[in-house]
Length: 453
Image (cartoon, rainbow, N blue to C red):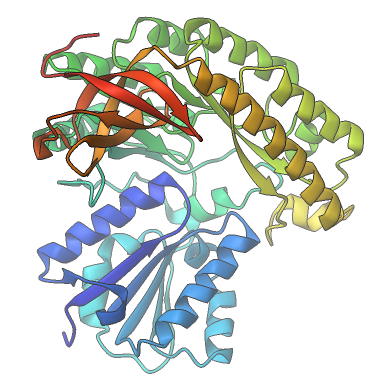
């Protein structure tokens, strides 16, 4: 092996971030050292393919890294998995010779490939077909690199095949991490001092469907709840994202009685128009979405309710968009992740839906949604004044402030006369004093050592 210094970058979802953390740890164990971008010898990009913008960003990053005269560049993740031939053609055209393209399965063996191919003269592709992804790739993380919240990948894959989405082709069919292994990973991270646990997956609500016998997500959540209770400490248990059609009575029952569940729910909507939802092959109606959202709101009126919306799906009319706007305006939704429709080669929407929405129309619709959600977010934040919230400490700012994230997913600066480094990763209580732009300022009420809810 001719190099030991590496630099890694992640694009896309929380699952990618978890996998990158494993890649980093696996390289540490083999004697590699992480370093600044300018001094790295090998560069690793864990890529995303959800949008055209993400694909272009990958190419831009690789071209930038070429200027550092690297020994090797490794491109892995969703983009590498789905479009390896496109990448190979592009790399040949751009004269990028020292590139290894690794698929999802191969990303878990990056140290092996770095040692085996320490020197190459032409781009190399090693990508297993997604249909071969039969089992959950088990791995453990000792410490979530440079994070104060612990993300745990408990599920991978998706078989929903929404008409616009490339993810099933990038991740394969749903696979679940068994309960015992989830608890083992949680225990390892608690030992490292983490007090916020975030369960994440490509399609989290499908956890357990492939297990024998099949289980529901609520089964896992109750087991995690029981395990966390045994530590007699205060934890925050957060879910990354869950589809609204998978929130059933078993989930709602857990939400009602859990002492750890964060009042923060990300429920992808994509469109408020039933016509567009049908074209998207989304398995719910706008009425059903609002019905479930209202049930959660009744349990957690203080929650951040976030959603994804795709603007400009082929054939989206002014009336379709108006229905989306109305749902956002007249529901508890108070946080948005907006996407311009991006045709993904190989998907149904790219093959069959040709009625494009002009870019200027998409931009105007996004502006209206952004304007609306900013107003709603301000109203939501103002209601936080005077409340006492749990928050996980992420960084220390000077001698008088802790910076963190509240249980209901709001950035907060917490005043205290006694900033201690050992508060990092810990859950504290803070009383909200004021709203500053789109974050909160509060006073430290208590650094928690026992369960005090």
